[in-house]
Amino acid sequence: MVAEVAKRKGQQLWTSVDPPGLGQVNDRRRVQQILINLLNNAVKFTPEGGEIELKAWIDRESQMVVYSIQDTGIGIAADDIPRIFQPFVQLDTGLTRNYGGTGLGLVLARRMAELCGGQIGVESAIGQGSRFYVTVPQLTLASD
Image 1 (cartoon, helix red, strand yellow):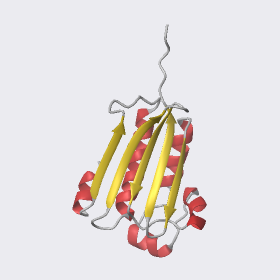
Image 2 (cartoon, one colour):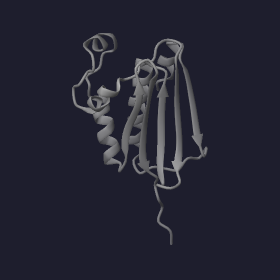
Image 3 (cartoon, one colour):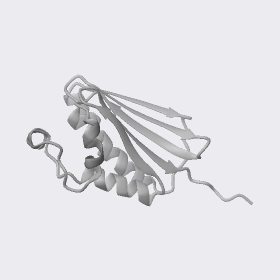
């Protein structure tokens, strides 16, 4: 869903899923919405020619499915990271003019992750890009 926009910006999209038939999650639609939001942000805040990588794996210890979206975008200052998950917060009015948005996407993504029994977080530095991660419980099937 985001590949066409990334292609127009000359960005490389990479994916890595381990294992290839990654476990199911309880609310696939909600998780898909979270990932689309994070990928759209990565494309939006990554300059032309940049790279975006989506990785997914199962954390065997916690039995959580982990998704990681890493980009080579503009990055976020450490002091601003707590603010990006607050409603209607735009970090810089110049960014708002350049990139648009309402300041609700990450708030909604965090809430959806929590509703799935998971969480969302970010590691970032200005000029070095960002890595958002989402963890959600792996679907467990009842056994006889």
